[in-house]
Image (cartoon, rainbow, N blue to C red; front, side, top):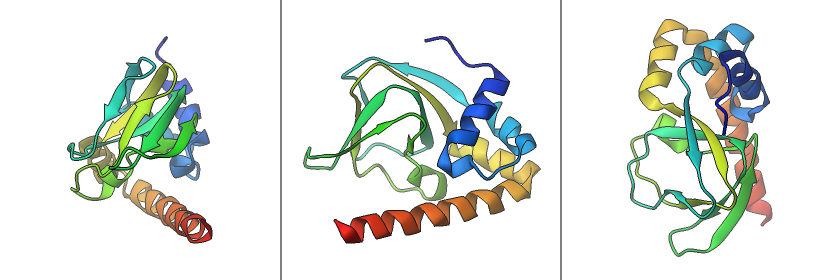
Length: 145
């Protein structure tokens, strides 16, 4: 799949819930640190127990998320993300992700995020606000299941 330009990556990030509240300058700073990854259908992105050091934003395609026992928890498609726990703690993965279709991901490592935050602390505040909203939505969704 053809890699996205810097401006295309920034506009893509604006669609990703975790980054949607950030201004264009912050998005551009993050976009230049993103890594492009292509995966084939049925390819595993990661498995339980693997080191968690990056977040994956789905630019194209669909993935399936499985718990440790191999039960499918959900399907995710563009512009959703996964692996966000790696941005905020040092825990290993407790679930697996497999590509349902060919996929293109834009990934951000924890070290790049920390670099961005040191250059522009306002990014940390925006990310924490967005992430806390995500957590409250996830908990409400889990409570209703």
